[in-house]
Image (spheres, rainbow over the protein chains, first blue to last red):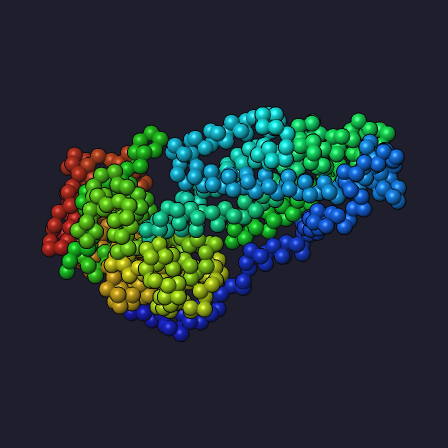
Length: 303
Length: 318
């Protein structure tokens, strides 16, 4: 018996096997790059997002008018070489307002998504890993939030706290964190039963280290996708709320522009078409990118 | 030789719908320093559960585990973490037991970081590279990820990780059953070389009788959560005393074609359920020697000859 095993084992053989079986490098960044080559929609989404971000950053150089400057001599003017997207009922240049509105709308997209990402991840990890009481409390609160109609809940928050941009961030974070927490909790529950977590426990690795070094990094692909899908979600919610009149009246977001232009929709369609198209393009761009990222990252996790 | 590990009447029961799974029932054994105790049995007999109980990865329903004379159930928190430095585990599935998002170097280094061994990162890294070489991995692979390696190489990573804290006892939970035969031989030889060089003690869990025979000094046979037989390897393989052990040995494939026609006694019937195990001896429903005694009382583990323990009312003659 001992002889037989010894015969098949030689240092030379094992060296050859070691060298032959290394597979080519296929990291997560490589697979995302490949995704952009294959998935044209995701590439389009990325290009559009970059363009919108540049527009927000260089708004003063792009728009020729002050977005808040009134010009009572040309109210509700149709699109012309002077005013590309026409003017609104107070004579403000619609193009300038769409360009400057990208700043507000991108902020509305990013900040609440970031807050709910952090909040949802921390609470989801706690619920999933600690279980028992923590799980019960956190998930029942999440259930309450999810059971409420989101728009109604956000409107209640805005009415209670007052209509300004900061409260808009708070309202949108409150309706978004619960979904993230649910996803992270579910992932944590499945990851903590994995053998590599058990291995870490058997080595005497502390609980905090297991959560932050093993469980969180393995949730990351899903979190990236959730984040890119939360951004257009927040922009849409803000638009709806501004349209319904509970947004910040001083923040010239695209949603507010649609809301203010709706009275003139038949006579001056450019008032709602310009900001409406801006919302449409931005939301689609993020959705394309998010879909692409999900496709790029999931197969990597399966191999 | 000193006793390194001892279990006393270990019991683990898992509640399920309509009853209790008796995964491990009243198991007592000890492992001496420097020896390899093989643990064999069919799927579902509680081998892996026993391994996890020994490491205190799952709490026992009752019974105690002593490691270096210390009762694990009395230790918690920091003391348990310190005790765990002395015993490590090599897992069955080299795909599931390595974090897919950690580089190989960081996987092997993790026990060092967790126990704050080595003062600088460079010192730890040097230690990791040294270990990688010892288990037959090139240190250049330090920054690669587990999915870039083959099964055998991953198992080497798992072995290196188990060695980092210089443990005394390593629990090998079917370390080669997920690998193909030629790689199995390499890993087994690596394990026996390491045992020689580092004076390791193994609790080697497997369902492959040939593998267990190759490595073990003593072998323990389990059936439905109970120990049937515990004997020195050669005694057990040449002259099994428990009927179940003999059936297991008879079931090993015969490599010599000219001997394949020889009559072999093979087991019939279904495996009894661990949810409702039969009364008395749990093996009696499938045992050709079973009689009224076997149904009436459970046979205790008795020392039939020096060092050979067997739990049977009608042990086979040598």
